[in-house]
Length: 546
Image (cartoon, helix red, strand yellow):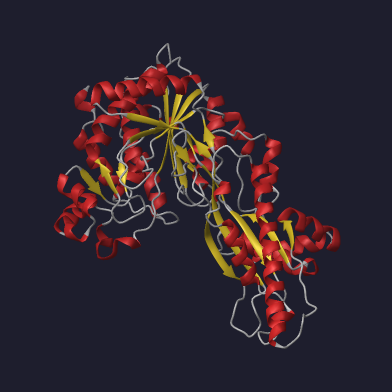
């Protein structure tokens, strides 16, 4: 049997990883399509899939890309582990003069070793050790995919007493189109092939909790992410008469003052806390220069979630916007008074009042005021001009159109959500997860002297967010009603998420510096220790006590 193995030894897996990394599958490029076909081509070489081609499939995502499923079905078995990975990577602009070598790990590592004095000391140590392989996608996350392919090969060679379903997807780094499209397919495959999903296993790499963190982690969930936006609509004016209107740049600045690094949004879990929100975008919406002030501006914020509900999150965001509105009013009044004193006047009769709305409230007002036909025409105008625009740009454009239509409500701050949304998932209380956590911790310590630490949330954001839903379906309307592009260019199959509801585990390789030019993988841990531990984990799930 050993002679038939093509993806099992350390050297075989290094070669497989390098072959996968060499495909420059940057999100949104044609190479993502090539990558999916390459994975199918590699697995087609296994005798099992030559005899069962129906179990190895390319599935269209609807935008020209594909995700891959590869099912090894054990006769009379229902227990199934889903192996989830993504095969897209971020771009390589950060590699500078080494950019052309970013997808060739062996060559890149040798070149970096020759230039090691250019890198920080901790990177130099890893270069000198000879234990690390550098390159885009080595850790995030083509190593995880390579190990999953090795597990599928083992299943094909008769190692496991259950079913393995490999699912690898594009677009995880941007909008998770691949995983969101795959969820209904997982539900249908369970029905068609009589599969009982016991576990969804991801192998994203471990992420450091602090600089210099060298711990080994296993995660029983994945942190959530939401992207709230605030469109500020002020009042037009000429720059020569600054107190005759309200500058939206000031409004957005005040919103950012309230949102940026606001620890009220942080949540706590054992040994973890969610980072505070931070601005992803802030700009005015003037299209050219003129002496008119910008009276429309927008900002987007990265907000990470653990246990907090969507409804509670919306309430907190609205409260934050109202505080910003009050600050804008006080600031404006103060500056009016200061300017009045320059003119030897006691006061100027000029005040402002800033309102706060959700997008859902604004749209309802627009429909009642202008009628459904008018609103549909407004939205159609945006869709017709949407070529090449991202979901975030489209969301901003739609809110802006509504704000201009309903300008009599201004000055105002409008809360909305732009894609993507990753629901938080956490399954540490599930009996199987508790068992796996205990057994894998003991096995790692006894076999490799590795003190494996279990954390509730993978802090790097992952596609595990889409294999269950803790929210009630009624609760997600607080989100969907405030996503301007919902149902048009963006959606999440929430009903199928509820149907899946499978415990999750993220157990992956050790890497360093994701999305940086020093991205690297610890090879021995990945292709010897981790591979063995994952085999042990799979066997445990399929055992009687599992």
